[in-house]
Image (cartoon, rainbow, N blue to C red; front, side, top):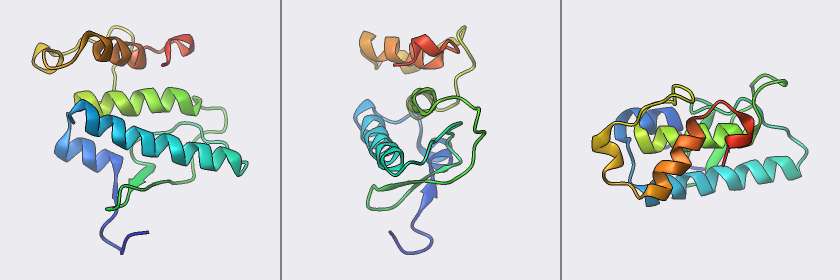
Length: 127
């Protein structure tokens, strides 16, 4: 772990640096997914994953803070929402979410499609 003061939440990253370039957003989300896998292997279920509960260390490692509603949205849905936030700069507004043209112009059609599915409220649409 990094020394105190070197860790910040994903929400802070979104607030101060988003939208992130696709490679950087993907890198952060790979670290989040690795931590989710580690927690799952340890028998810890993660629900209602949000940007305030994900902490990033200066070395790129991730810690997911406890909390969330036990009956909340599965971690996979939370991953989709976090990817959207990193890529667009705000949480998804729902299945009718409109992307700002200045953001999507620099994204591949596949990335836009992935983010559109991530913004969807339907569980079967989560990437």
